[in-house]
Structures are given as structure tokens and as C-alpha cells.
Image (spheres, rainbow, N blue to C red):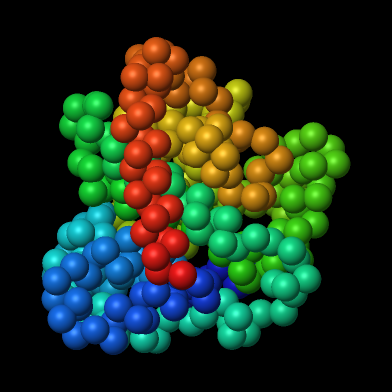
Length: 282
């Protein structure tokens, strides 16, 4: 597979349903200064643009800004408003085949949002983890998958079909058919866009199954959030089955099913709040 598109991809497009609510809020001048993060916190495409700009040498903190909250405070509402207004929308993105691919982009975006809020709330149960950094990592954890889906939609469709037919995980199908996984694509994009190593490392470890290893608590929490999102019906619509090996994640974090059962009311409540927020934006 030709990888030139990875080197030339400067940003990801957002989806129309997501942009509609964001653009409506942008039109309210008072809202811009009040809570800029709230407007962009559930859109991985805009989040990546914000992180890319905040980590540029121009702002004095190259490759050191690891959360949306940090980035928003550094850039200010004016710069973010301009960025939102120039964000490409998927339906007008100059790529062919995304309709024919039958990819459910709304489901992919919702999965990212659910993983983000679960990561933030799960991080409170473990020491030395910053909630805002966990949220941001959860939100952008699938940017390699999103990039492949929006830039090469028919290739992604064929890869998903191959995984389903052969009983492979999506990463296995990608490596066999394309010679590269969405995790690696995400890490390459993160490096290209100047993300800090903390974000790039989590992106690169986007696959923890039987043969994968958990190397740090932040990655483990992101994957625990992914596991729960799939388990509770908020998969990304692309993986044929839950891609996370729960045993490895549980072992690394030293938790058990009893812990998840104890946390479940809190976690399902924050999921419901996300769903209500996104419904209100539609």
C-alpha cells in the first residue's frame, strides 16, 4: 500500500453532525470565552488540529502539550474559533468512496467520545494519572483508524470484510493486506503533527490482545476504557469483536471484575451525560 498520503495528511475532517453543533456555538460570541473546551471535546478531528497547533514551535512549547485543556488555554478562543471555521467537513472532503464504504462515521466518533470520558473517569482510580491527559488520549486513540477510513474508505471496507471473513482482528487484517496497522498510522500522524511522546506512545500501542503487552498505566487505562466501551455496546463499527485482552489490562492495573462492578454506576452515568450532550448538539 502506498503510504504517501500519510506524509501529506495535514488534518482530519470532522463529520457533519458533529460540526453542526460546534459551529452553532461558535456563532455565540459569549460562549467562545466561557467554555471553549466543551465545544470541541468530543470531536477527535478538531482535537487533533488544536493539539497540532498548540505543539507548534510558534507557541513556545513544541511537542509538550498533552491535553486539550492545556492546548485551549495556550491558544485562546480566537485561534480555536478560526481553526474550527477552517476544519474540513467529511461530506465535502475531497475523497471518493466514503459513502460506498458503508462506514458508520457517527459510530466511530461516538466510540472515541465514550472512550475519552471513560478514560478520564477511570484515571481517578489510579495514582499518578492526569484526568485531562487521559481524556485526550482516549479521544484521539483511534486517529489512525479514522484517517484510514476517511482517506482510504474503500480500502478500509475491504480490510474490515477480510477480518470478518477470516476471523482475524482488524490489526491482523491491516498488516496482512496493507503492510501497516491503524496503530502505526496513528503514531506516524502524531509524530508528523508534533504531538508529545506521551501521546504518540499510546497511539502506537493501540492494540493489546493476546500477543500485546501493557507497558504503562496510562495505556492500560485507555485500553480498559476501550474494552468497556465495546462491552457496553459502544464499539467503533469496524472491529469484528472486542479487540482488548481484558486479562492483560486487569492484571497490569491489579483490578478484578468486582472493581468494574463497583465503578459501573459512575461510569454509565458519565456515558449517559455524553449521549445527552451529543443529542443536544444534533
